[in-house]
Image (cartoon, rainbow, N blue to C red; front, top):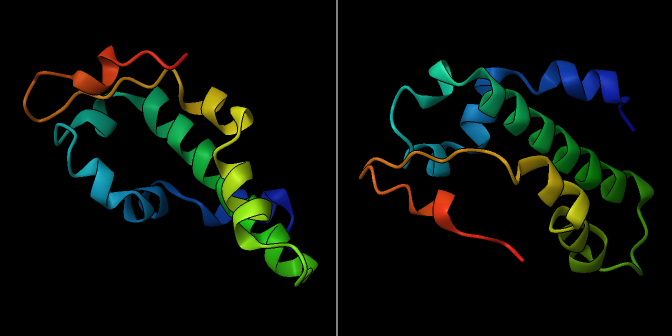
Length: 103
């Protein structure tokens, strides 16, 4: 299993943009360049998600289903807390994602 430091090195700005390109394409084009905090938060989220996936692969426990071992952890409160304060300015300027309250 790669160390957290190796994962940090691997997950660069360009890696985050590549992994999240579908979702980033719905943001204003220069948002990530203007909001360094959002990019840092997304990098942290991607790193944490990759670490969860790698732990599942390296543990090799075939009895544990992917959905339980990985997807539930990625959807956990721990990762939600990382991204909950990100501002999401949309191309339409409606910014509907920012208006959603998660209870």
